[in-house]
Image (cartoon, rainbow, N blue to C red; front, side):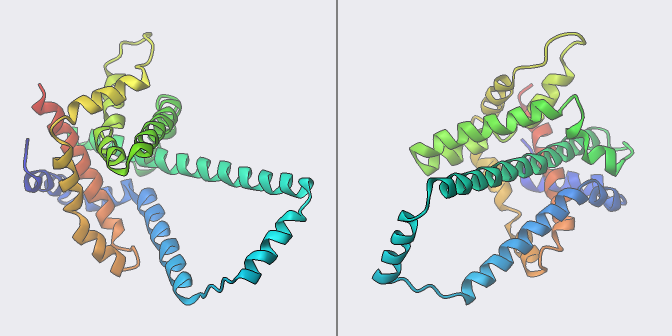
Amino acid sequence: MKTRAELKTSVKQLFKGRWKDAILLCIVVSLLSVFSVAVQTNNSAHHSTSTSVTDTATISGAAQTLSNISWQTWAAITGVLAAGGLIALIYYCVVRIFMVGTSYSMLDWFRQPDREIHPVSDSTVGFTRRYALPTIGLILLQWLWITLWSLLLIVPGIIKYFAYSQTYFVYKDMLANTPAGQPKPRLRDAVTRSRQLMVGHKMEFFILQLSFIGWAIVCGLTAGIGLIWLVPYRYGTAAAYYQNLIESHH
């Protein structure tokens, strides 16, 4: 396996003279990341300036109010919460599909350095018929398995997160190697293959992610603006890592 420095150098070489392409390819994901940072910053500021007063009378009054709510009102509240949860799930899936599609295009670019970048079509490739439903399936499958492992203890959940980290790239390659007319690869096979690839490499990949923490701090100090450069750098490094990982297993 290449060192972290070698992986990052290969990405810098890929982007040399083409940083504009890298930024445009990842612009949607970058803007979503900037938005998330802005929301978190705003919430933190609001929380730090707010005060909370809780006493026995307040609790008693709240309990009395809840006991007087009719079942129709409870049904309405439940419906609103369910709708909110559904909207949040849809938003999460849309964001993840953008991220996966961008990752796929970044991997294609890494494998074909002279490849021409088409920001719109490349960043939305995850929404195409070829990838959309399988990607949603992988999102839900990963979420389910990591959540179940996390219910045992936090550490197993984190370990499985890194074990399954290559799932999307694996599925892309499995799909590309499936002959025309044959059934699509099973989603769980992609998860299993990722787990197999990451045996002995989870800590290595974890440290690779930590190596960007300095850049992340800088991005925080710039209200997230620095993410416009950091996101392509991270996505390029992730693609380089996966490519190097599968080559080391051949």
